[in-house]
Image: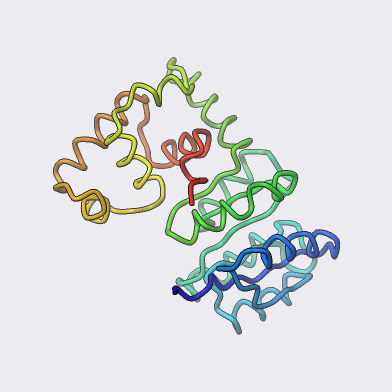
Length: 219
């Protein structure tokens, strides 16, 4: 049996903390190793515990969640960061991703999306709240003149879908090839075909599309 996913939780609202704690403790493979209610306490907690995943509210006293990530991401490369926020502005998302955040989750959807987000981030992927991902995907689609709908996904072959999903979760071409028992060149071909069918140019766009499709929610 694999060891549990070690998690720290930082939020300055006791009611929010309690709700998130209940979600985490209900999962048999997750272990909450500490809580903090401000940025300074979060810094100390994360340094001491070195969790697999640090969940942080963006808006906290003393140092905000993004500030904590910026201070510790270089020092603790093994920690994966998941931010909770009420901000749906893409500017916040862009800042978070630039800082090295692996998960960006709206508080209003935490009850249903926190656990899938943790699982996606833990295996090396990115998780963007579906509400935000949808807005970003639509915006990208308008700029390129192509649709960003479920019908695009239906145009993919099963193997193209598998390759793109593993790519969105953060797996390399070699890792994907090993999991699917195909050659690396084949993975590159499937990926290229998938990107072309979906009208995608970057991995960030793929992650957003994958979030909308629910590919990152599978356990």
